Length: 358
Image (tube, rainbow, N blue to C red):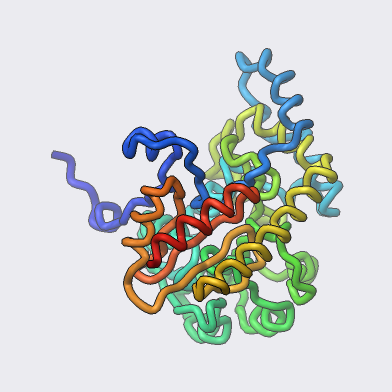
């Protein structure tokens, strides 16, 4: 038996949402909907699908390790130099690259709870120390997070919008916070859901990058662009940090179809507009239905809604909804996270939730 270090063996594995096919097979049902993983219910851009079909004949070749064409398109779109971009197998890989680059054993990383669980998992895997600060009013408590900075702090994670609550920290709050972050500490702002944000108070992280603050922005093609199955995301930071992160990046980490699809997804503005409009409309529908049922929820700036209960019943409600063919995400004992889906899916969800809470 191989002895695994305690900092690895004690990690609680990430449990992905239950696939529809598995649920239907286990329960002997059909017509199920998955509203658990914050996926785009419309799917990818038709332009992206067409580009992938054209690229199938080149699958005998290794992908472009530098993501050259995607890098050029994205640098033009974002108005940054191409050496300020790094691409990964989803933005998850960018998190791992940042941790591997910056964390030595015993170094600290500050993060909120509840937030994206992968932050703490990767830091622990690197033998770092997680400093966890509870949310305040369902949002990152930036004042409390700043107070936890020590001479061992190397990273601070801020999910904006936050997953699972869908809340944001405002420009004023971020401005105040960034002034308190010392040199030598990297702020990782995870903006996986930034395209869905409607609030005018949402901060523009590029202002901190232009001001030469130590910031790494994380973005993804998994959500708004509907390419979750291809696993492609990217990071934006100072060229000097990107250079160091590239030293621990595998040479062919982003597959060729993902690169091709991402380019066309960026260009299809009509598809992006359609996805965002659907999300706005369906969130309003769900808010209204939850209010009718007396279900508590947190207003969201993302494509999901955090639903809370006064008792530890989330697991029971989750199981009951499974039997009605609806998959949501339990978030601890008294909350579930619900992805906004298509209208028919959301109606099925409302019906199942209504039965589950009785």
